[in-house]
Amino acid sequence: MLIKNSESHFGVVAILFHWAMAILIIGLLILGLYMVRLPISLEKLKFYGWHKECGMLAFLLVIARSIWRVSNLIPSLTLPWWEKLAARTVHYAFYGFMFAMPITGWIITSSSGLPVSFFGLFVFPDLISPNPDTMQLFQQIHKWLGYGLIATIFLHAAAALKHHFIDKDDILRRMLY
Image (cartoon, rainbow, N blue to C red):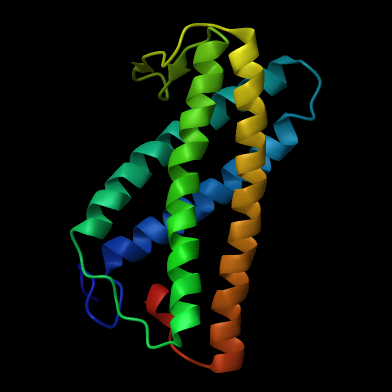
């Protein structure tokens, strides 16, 4: 397996970024949906801490992934123009979500006057001053971005499965190995 992407396949680094971030982001979405429904408790605060730390990990990974992506080939797609357009649009949407979700989460935490720790190693600086109105606004933005990300994940997975089982092409396989 190649480290870098080729004209026809993704390299091992791109594949590892894809699957590690997929697992991390799906886990963050599940945790986020679960924790917001809990009553105030130490357990809820613990989950919020994990959510913030893993969210910032996702943010740092998407920065690294973006750098890797722009410095590598993107394997060509031998698809009709409208499928290429749909695929590129979904991928750009993913990058938008992967940047917007942690930034809005960071703004929520900053506007609530709480620190954003990175697994106890360091604390990220506040992006804004504490402000309850800003916090509520960004909680709504973060929530709706999350719903949009969930919908995009389902669309992406459905397209990958369609290509694998109906079209029987190598679109899914080239992200597996």
